[in-house]
Image (cartoon, rainbow, N blue to C red; front, side, top):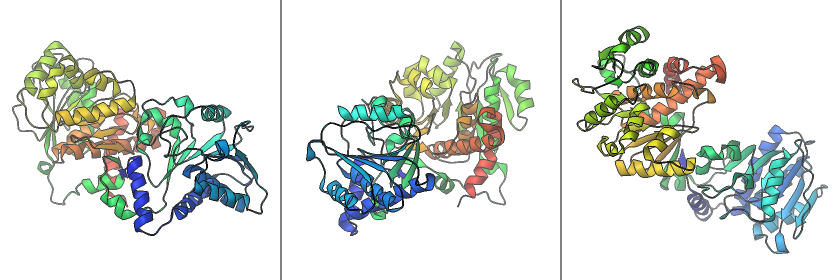
Length: 507
């Protein structure tokens, strides 16, 4: 799914109105119908509902929703902000008049100057239509106090379009306390880019899309730099297996990892690769890993490294379709040197994860030797060690886009809604996953899955995108059996094949 900037969404709105004969009023009515349906699906007419409406389009959406709810037997309290008495847009004024013209008894207050906050309790449902995507600056004055009062009330908050105070694209100077903390955000037609910033999770809450029928032509023609990866996109990438297939058709991969005390990481990476359908897998580890690897993953071939307790050289003397380096590798000086020697001579895209990234952070100049189109899979801490300390998740994403373009690499920035940043700076947010994935070794399994896809001939950016999504679905399947608390990385690996089948059968 394409994710558009706020300006692009305005352009799609405008195209829909100008080229397809849909009026702005009709779009507001569609929004109100979607919001009212969601409210009515969740709460009965006796539920105390308070609606806060701003002076612009977001306020018009809220007032139109109030009218529909009143017509359906609800009795919301409505507060319209018209500071100074001349702030209302023509559309908002028209919906105010339509609401006041209702024959039903409705509590309505228009605020033009001072305002006494209404009593709000955890029993209340608040519909937030104060400011949506039209907001261009951080909140000030009384609006800040109102937002803080709403947040402190403990009430359930449903925000239309965006939580008031939050921007749709980026929020570099935002103070979370000064932004509505929504329980549910009803996004208009598209989720916003800022929804996928983990720092904003507490602001957005649950989010759902209200489809208002914006122009499919405009959606198709406008180029997006951000995407949300869903099952359909991954299914379109994955190739069905032919009845006449042999293991030779699915590539040979090399996984380099493990050190004394951290051999489990190499085991988990190998299990991920094997469950993701790799044709042949070789695991290179120090001599101390022979018995462990041959016992834990007998399906993989073991290739010994000259090091007894850690990897001391990386001399690839076989033709591998894909190579992944890092799980449990350690950062011994000899290992760092071995990685440097390898990168200076290797030219095919590869996967660098975990301690391979930590080795790079000790010698950042080696980034210039990483083969183009390679896949780096850092979590936040590994990313900051490698590319410098970042003050927020948003700043980290911007930096990742910058370095992906500069070094022509692909970055898997792991976290809530893991972001796959392609070498051209395009960002693909992942939609699958569960808190169960926050378990030791989960990232090693992901590395193995991506290795398997790369070995099978998928382009690096597609292997990363599909691998992340598959990994998330595998985590969801494992959580169904073991719960979010009980999932181990081995469970995730074991569910990888089932996850791929589920995606391939998606309708």
